[in-house]
Length: 164
Image (cartoon, helix red, strand yellow):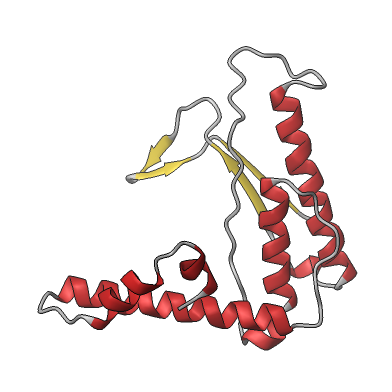
């Protein structure tokens, strides 16, 4: 079992659950996918531990740690065998409830955290010479009004990072 499941005290339970067989196809599929996810996580953890290239300094914020992890996987791309990766990082807490965008406000702090994390990520990718191969997209549901296009909801705000 992976280090994460052992830290959470779930290893014994997961081993039993994954060992038991069921006649239910959904249960068997779930069990198979869970087991594969655990093994893939363990394999990726071993690759990241052994990879010589490590990410540089990132802010110690939620979004900073997420982008540092994404950078670590990108730097290990030679060992993972992945041709391309897609990562999802998130940061909550931007609803200001009529607070102004002034230095020191919650909104100002959150925006600076995102800015600093993206800046560190960009610096790392440029140092590796792969920034031109990276696409960063930021989306928001600002205004709480998502537009439906053929039953797909589109957010009101999108930001794309590019050198050009």
